[in-house]
Amino acid sequence: MRVVIQKVTEASVSVEGEIIGGIGTGFMLLVGIGKEDTEEDVDYMVRKVSNLRVFEDAEGRMNLSLKDVNGAILSISQFTLLANTKKGNRPSFIEAADPEAGEAYYQLFNQKMCALGYRVETGKFGAHMDVRLNNSGPVTILIDSKNK
Image (cartoon, rainbow, N blue to C red; front, side, top):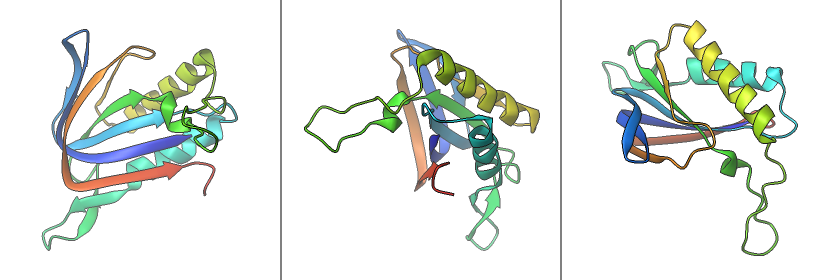
């Protein structure tokens, strides 16, 4: 499982020109599920994302978590995070989960983040989405559950 975390001051997602999700301060997450991922990977990501301290404290140090700043999450499914570009110029996505498993683990991840008390907005699984964000910092972090 791979998640790209972007610290944002605002972010939104649209499908066919209609905004279907949006947040203010928080994390915009791009969530990629691999074919070998399990619920253990989901739990690992939930722990990492919820405890990541990248928001500034009173001294300007990245020392506060999403919970500390009462932040929200915009979670976007993105199988292309599992792209393999080793050969040629056209990426291969054979390491990505099939759509049924990918959606199940993506939804489980979002449910577990909600269970921790976060407001979670989402895109539409499998749809062509337009994502807009104001990356604060900029802070962008990639976490891969296979690189613990």
